[in-house]
Image (tube, rainbow, N blue to C red):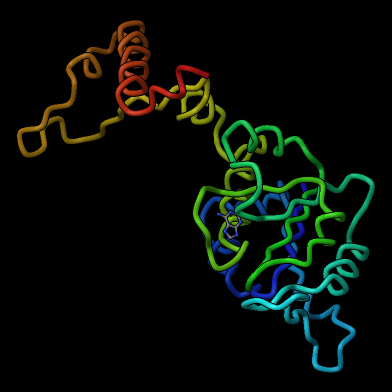
Length: 221
Ligand code: ADE
């Protein structure tokens, strides 16, 4: 998979791309991530990328030209162009699963007051990571890329994906490691029994119990 990210703040991605599982996925060639500073595409003598809104009002608005020209330089027939915006559809595990099947994703990260409305005509999809407003689309693009990259076959082990939260609309079962007793808190005895069938049943029941308690809305879907 190829991911291109259009941003005015490429340095924000340094830790995300150079640590842990995402770093390894890139090294293994499972994904390539390219950052594009669309300021580099500005035709303005001062590399301007934003201007005041027509009709007046607060803040600055991102202009069409740098973003359209940047997109023209990277778009292919396989590309899916995604704008990060609080007005978009809210991101879910289901969306991560469907986006993980795509060949080429392009994320457009806004900053400041917003985008010139005409930029939307160049986008295929609009995604929000929740009902709150951030200073820009950089963190949302990292959140979404992270959720997608870990689903690419070979990035993390398959068993972890099969049992984790939101698979089958259930939260994950509780897990424990050594020691058996910590500050009077004991590991459930079934997990020490060695009986795999009993452990499987216990985990299934715990998943259901936890989902009912914490996220009963998932069971309604
Ligand atoms: N840009 C600013 N806030 C955002 C959000 N919640 N989701 C996606 N993009 C955003």
